[in-house]
Length: 321
Image 1 (cartoon, rainbow, N blue to C red):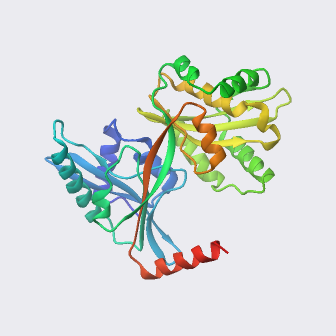
Image 2: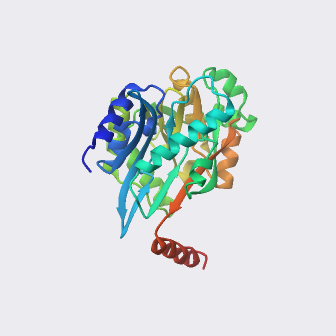
């Protein structure tokens, strides 16, 4: 889709609003969604009061608003007036979200994941959405790395100290090499990589150009990559977007070391570190041992197509067999 007047307005807003999360920036959406994104915008006296970027794609026969790849969250951005009491704040949120949703195109399915700071999903419920609770784990303040390190479980601290004797940490591994390592380590586990190299290259180019992301990897003396991270950040939070671990070196402690090195690297650039969460029990346990706190967020879905709902039910039944 070409830039509409609203999308052009959103681009200008994105380039001038410092509080907008990295996942909602126009350059991020260009990298992960190409032309397949647009935005709803509510203004008052020439100032944006609410904005909702979205990815619009035809998936099979169905038109969907869905999450772009490699994107943790989207959802509405609201400029809530200062000094509102709780009742007026909720009224403002409802009015803004209603206005934003009215601007969105009619689709067979609408799916987005919200930021954990959005705790009020009632306006979406009143518009016919369902919500699925999900969890992420967050270190709320990484500006004092030594204080963060002291909050790690003793097993994490031990693994990190031991790993420093086994591997060398290097930043800024080129995108093709990082991608190949991720593909290779997944193949060892019988899994396939879920995103293509051209997409990852575009994302890397975008975050390096905007100074909001980097790769980091752990190498042993023989040149083997034990683990790697691709982390992006904005003014408020860093996000552990992609993690790679070679199963042959899983016990080297290098993945914990990389998290620690990234925290030190980012301590002067942002405030929080978001592990991006996982519903996998062993992964969740690892995140907790960094001293990270659990945060609840919502995945919202609205299905207006009876045919899509029927297809969903068939897939669910087949998946349980």
